[in-house]
Image (tube, rainbow, N blue to C red; front, side):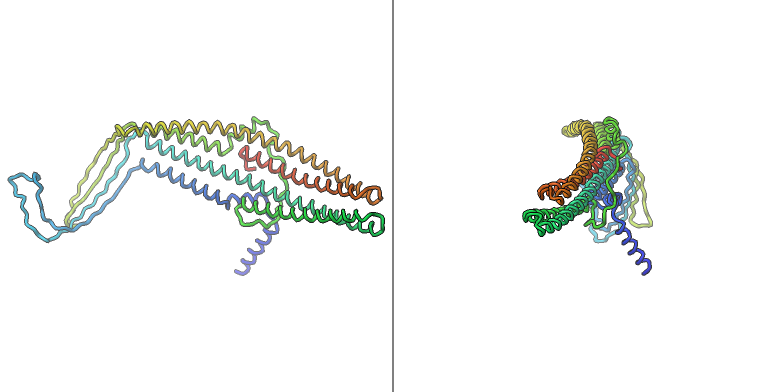
Length: 430
């Protein structure tokens, strides 16, 4: 037992040391996010309602048993007996047992498919709820991807600001030696100390931003906190990233759960409308029952009966007509939502694809700017050491290099987020 516990502990420590991959974060989110748990429960409830709607199409069987003990004093109701018969009876406090029981089965024979259409409407509603759950899963995946790479970007900014602090601290040490030797004025030393202080403040803010980003990641994953290191780097190009807009829009309309949800809603409303129209016609049902009565259990008297029932609601104050008008209007509104979704999918895909293209170019430019600013900083440091450059020139070069590093980190995050939005726009998991 101790050995097994030790192995579990070692395995947990090993997993913690391995860090958190994006796939792990996505798996945890799909399992832990409360909104998804609620959506899955609602999906199960919708499936149960579909089964409920099918129940009236099956035979309904009931069993009843009764026992009573009462006196048997008879009172003739006027007109219940011929006048030639005496209706008098003597009073007695003697009581008697009486047993009765019945078993009945009733089945719907025909109602012009009204009940069947209500069942089909409930089934399509359950399908729509399943598609809504799927849509929430894709939204959760988008949120996790965005939060995950936001943490990575903030950690890169911490590295950039830490490098800037180390560099400004090295400048401070160098300038202190120059000032002590009388090669530089005191103002250079004050400038260098201010730069170190600013760099420390930037590092504090960057670390705080990492903590906030991790808190947001924990929220979208559905856990209390995320302590493990994030091991996955920025995502590469996704499949068909350069496909035509029309092709990606077609993929989105076919794969997006919202499209399946609205299609199921349209079908549900069509069946609901057909069910309402069926209410204009009569309903035929059949019933078979058997009952038994006895004063003593040894002397049971059984009876068997069968019945056909035809009911027709000829007028309900305009209820059926109003229900039909409501169903028709709801169907029109649902079909209009389909057209709205088609426009929204096109906008989502086009915007995400444009964002990917722009982010790729921005990342290339940011790398070029970082390379150029790094060369500028190298030259400024050489000029300052040779006494040809000023501390302001050195400070400006350091600031430019730090900003370029931050721009690279931000551009990388922007590209990762744009690719995540493109995946969601076309309804893909990866």
